[in-house]
Image (cartoon, rainbow, N blue to C red):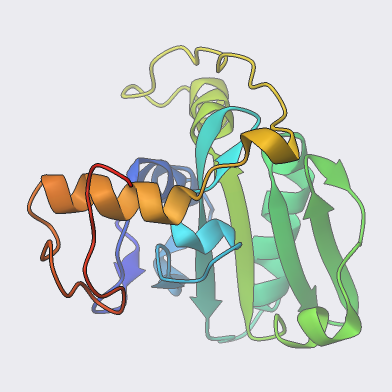
Length: 193
């Protein structure tokens, strides 16, 4: 069953596939997506983070408890019990239970403030490779066999790149930004120097 998505929510390849997984949740018709790709530097919501060499994404799952087992507890428990090994982040607090995963490990590195922000929705992040693994396990017809990402070397300080500036330059070349007087950057020399 299709999941309701709030107006204006943007998706990438990873978050679209996450929706396919969430459609398998027994009460999927009762949940909705409040957020996916958005401008939030450092967050898996940013849509341009990489986890273990694979593009990643995050979705926020909203719910209204309508009776029976509370829905927030049910969706967080379902993700936690079935997909923790393929989850980059899971954050939810329901019925006094903390559902927390970080980097494919059932652990709780999150601050009390972060946990308090996740009592009314469930935050779930994963990578394209991991979500393909989940879909293959679920037998989803559209899921290709996952291909492990190529290993990524750790960057030393001497090798660090301003990826945001690089992305902006590529987007400018593609016509997605004005070359001069971009959003807040002033004049830009696309070729460095």
